[in-house]
Structures are given as C-alpha cells and as structure tokens.
Figure 1 (tube, rainbow, N blue to C red):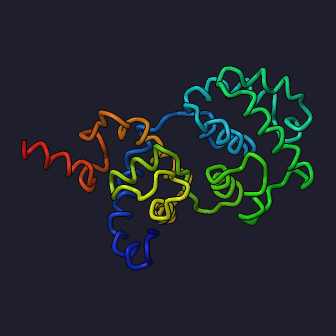
Figure 2: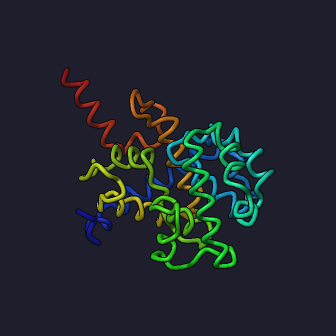
Figure 3: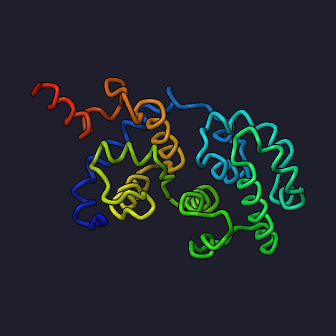
Length: 233
C-alpha cells in the first residue's frame, strides 16, 4: 500500500534527518564520475542513465569518454549505423539491446526536433524509456524532484524505513511513495539521488554492509534490528 498523507507527515522528521546526514556525508565520500560534473550535458546525463541499467557505474565510466567523443547529440546517434553503435557498446555487455534501444529513442526524438516531451505519459511512450529513465528525464531535463529508484536506492530505503510489499520495485506503491517523498525534501534532488545511490553501492551493500561507517546508522531500522539480535545472542 502507498503512504497516506498522514503517514508521510509522521515520517517527516526521519526524512529530514536522512537528507541532512547524507548531504553532510556525500561531498567527501562521493564516487567521482564524469557525468556528475557541471559540464555534463543533458544528452550525456540521459544516455548515461540508460547505460547504467544492469551495468555497474564504474564500467560505464570507463566507456564514457570514448562514447561521448563519438556521439555528442541525439542527432549523432540517430545518424550512426546500428553496427557502429553495437561495436562501441561491446565493452559493457548487452550491446545489441542497448544499441537498438538508443537508436530507436534517437529516431523517435527526431520527430520532435530532438526535444523530450514534458508530460509523463508522453515520456513513457518513448522507446527505451521505462520508469527509471522517465524519472531521470524529468529530473535532469525538466527539473522535477524524481527519485532514481534502483536496487541500491531500494535497499537503503527498505533498511532505513521498512521492507517493501512487492518484489518488483516499479510497482510497490509504498516504496515509490517514500522515495518520492525523500527526494522532494532535498534542496538539490540530483545530489541527493547520487548520495543515496553511492551509499547503497559503497556502504549499504547487499551483504556485509558497513553499518559502523554509515551516516544514517542512528535512525536505521536494519541496524537496530541487528543490534537487538546480537545482544540477544
């Protein structure tokens, strides 16, 4: 079930603490990726979010310079051959699927003059655009507070607050609600998104999380639960 307005209000203090502690932690510990600089274009930001799906960010970072030296715009992607695009994407795997997805998206954007639509429903009708990429488009292109909700962010939120109800994070209304409520509390939604993703990748790992190094440890239900189990045994 999704969060009601009352439930979100009751979590406001925890949400604010979550945001404040991550914003203090992030500047000194963040992962340094080329798309996180002020010089990254909107084109680079959106394409990167397509590439990082089912691929480690470090792997995409290694390809970044080569890819964006060759493709500087949606026009470049649209005009390139599928074979060439497949070849350049080989190092990160799933290259045939990724190449076709980006080629299809570039061709669809040609019809709009390479501008992304504003409405969410129109964005989601574009090829290669699922929930995650649609959120990225709204976040980076339209300046809307949208969560980059992937398995890393999901794990952090579930451990801090509570477990989701459904296996698929895209359809769990509680998880979607708390993720959006969190990002809406951030002065800089992009920075907070990256901070949560970095925490999930570096500290709040799937196994053997480094709870003692976590900036959220005081309010984290997962850590409290583990401490209680350790004390009991």
